[in-house]
Amino acid sequence: MKTLCTNCDQRLDIPEELAGQTVECPVCNTSLVVPEMAATQSLIPQAQATESRADAPQKKVPRAKPSMRSYDATPKKSKLPIGTFLIAAFAGLVMLAVIVARFGEGFSRSFPILNEVLDDGYLAGPSAAEKASIRNEILSINSSLRLNEIGANTVQQQIVSRQTATVEMAGLLARALGATQSDVASILSSMRLDDISNETVYQQNALRSSYLVKMLGLASEAAGASSSQTGSIESKMRLNEISADTVFQQIAIRQTAVVEMSGVLSLSMGASSSSVNSKLSAMNLDDIRNETVNQQIALRMSYFASMLYLGAEASGVDGTAIRRVQSDINLREISADTVYQQMAIRVSGGKDALELIVRSIVD
Image (cartoon, rainbow, N blue to C red; front, side):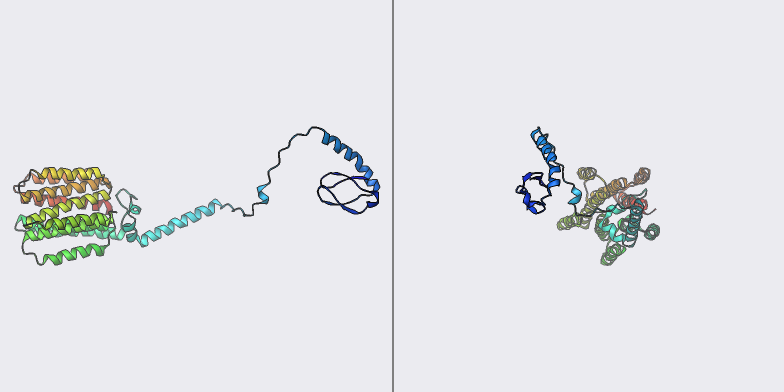
């Protein structure tokens, strides 16, 4: 009898006596039950039709690609509802604000960029309480300076008083930029302790110049400068001091370091390297015309303030306020009869420039 394989449609010739029994297809090895005679007869026309189709030309049918769904055992992630996402994002921002508020000082020193322009000033910076404290200390420094100058009998004593105020104002800038109050207090305490052994106003001036370098270095690092940058300036200063024969030469060397450190500070606050280098080159050029060490000192005191103005401008201090301070210093210099009077006025200019930057942060 003739029948078809139920799996591969192969036509099979099977002896009649095997009807009703299970046999194996010789082509695909599929087991199938041999149908009874009546069922076989009904399959013969179908087999003939199949033969006819096999003889006809066949079109190629592209094989269907297997569905990836049946092979992908990885469960798909469910989509997060937008409301849940917004709540999670808000919670994250609140948590960040709490961390910054709690550990703000450490964040300021390690990541100065976190303090960048959150309002119209250079930094959002210190907390409201710290800002209030710094504002009060600005008033205290200026008040003490006025009192000290009442008792000053010479212009040299005036210079010392103003240098002291300048170091203290640099300390406030360091705090406003993120330095700790204890670090600032440590430098001021050391300066007062070292001052005990000084016998002349010139030695006092030299001491304050040295500590101004230290305080500006602290402020620079708080603003983002590396310790290697600030340390190299201090090292060069100490090396140059070995050849100093007089206290005036010592002051000139230290005032050079003051200008260089204020340049690093201005760079850290956003001033361009070309503008800072231009100031240093101009100072070296102007220095050629100086005939005395005191003229050199006066020149450096002038460039100290000038360098700070670069940092003030870069940090967003109002240009009108900067020009007002510059004009005031220039106007006062018209009445200066001696190089020492020039020094006194220019020291004030440096202190006023520092105060301008501090106020832009804390006001």
